[in-house]
Length: 247
Image 1 (cartoon, rainbow, N blue to C red):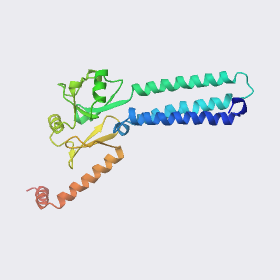
Image 2 (image 1 turned 180 degrees about the vertical axis):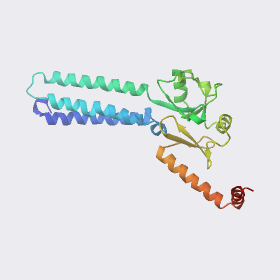
Image 3 (image 1 turned 120 degrees about the horizontal axis):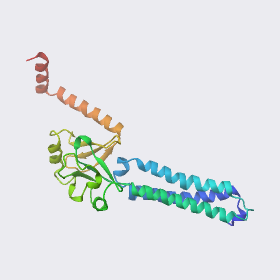
Image 4 (image 1 turned 90 degrees about the vertical axis):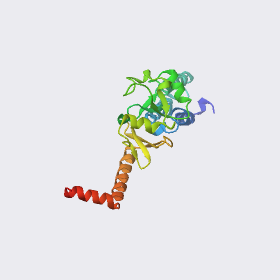
């Protein structure tokens, strides 16, 4: 269909359709490349990333086409070219920003503080390459600093070991009282300031991200399970009764 045979609404629909295809490709890129596996749940910034891309790709470009399109304008091709170039520049800039701040993996140095998220722009290229090429997305700190490095740029690949290497439980016990983070055969550590929690088994396998609401519900369920177990344990009841009676 030639431009001169279209009205502004047809031009808007055509521009929107093309932009939608591009947006769907970018969604696949975000989920498969930038936020794979548990990283999508561990860091919800992908939602802001998609909103930014959608704002540029699905709203800004087609809306400008709707506003300026007039098949009788001599400068129509120039106007549409400028819109396309501006949309492309904004899209590339947004993708560059998202790519630079994408999460690479999680690591824990001081268990009470939980996991920290390693981003592409907060670690060295050497560490980024090490993490991205690892079979694990979750690590623990093996360096000498008790609380971990002052900043993530100080991390080296020698400081990171995957949590499923068989020594994760020993690491936790060396940095906190034994069993502090273990419940019902699983290990639970918070993820930075996100409000989320990462669950693994005691061997560091099968990582799963729990939202704040899921973590609260799980904690309540485990508490009720422990209370029920204590109630059904006569030895535990005797100790509790003796304690209550001051014996």
